[in-house]
Amino acid sequence: MSATQRILVVEDEPSIAELISINLTHAGYQVEKALQTELALNMMRDELPSLLILDWMLPGKSGVQFARELRANERTKDLPILMLTAKSEESDKVLGLDSGADDYVTKPFSPKELVARVKALLRRQTPVGDAGPLSVGPLRLDPLSHRVTAVWSNVDPQILILGPTEYRLLQFLMANPERVHSRTSLLDQVWGNEVYIEERTVDVHIKRLRAALALADCDRYIETVRGSGYRITKTPTQT
Image (tube, rainbow, N blue to C red; front, side, top):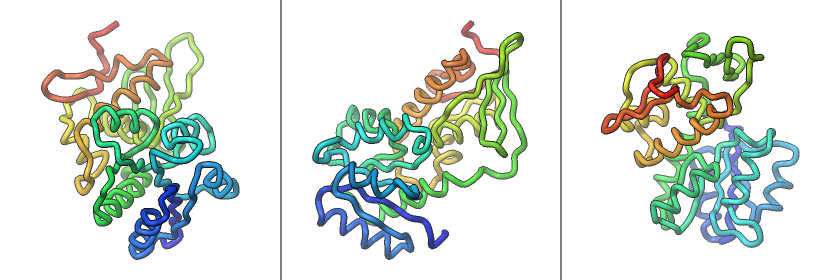
């Protein structure tokens, strides 16, 4: 781990922010704290952090709304976001992930688990091996430029915008086409087997991936195999 990795904690409860800061600093990270989103934006103006820990309930603008705005901004769309909240219902977790968060931790949390999730999220930002360009159907993925393109005949190539987790998920599926991958397998291969993440998270990111691919009519190439998992195919059953 690089000693320069910087984590910004956006949390309005000073005691919780301090607990997070102490544990992450002990783990070797540089930590900065903000009590609200406007201050966080100012702190990110000159340089983006390596990762953002974002509380759901904040004064003024909520963490969910802030996450959506960050994902919609070209400069911050790939910023890893760990959502922190007291809400524990599955619907709340799905909402947090749908807003753009890459992972979700429920209060009260274990500092050890929080540090493990931070490490896993940052590890996922590194390239996956030295795989060359990948191609499945109209989809083209170039790991060097980190670019995904839809190429249809008689149409100009269309660049698709994916979040960091969706990119890695697509990269793994395209590297292993036609094979059915269970949720557990995808968690191990894309998220890493040391991560405390529920299988439901895979469904949320598959949904997000399909939404991005749908803009170029490529979502049907990601198929759900009922009771088994997901695959990418060159010959989708849907037309």
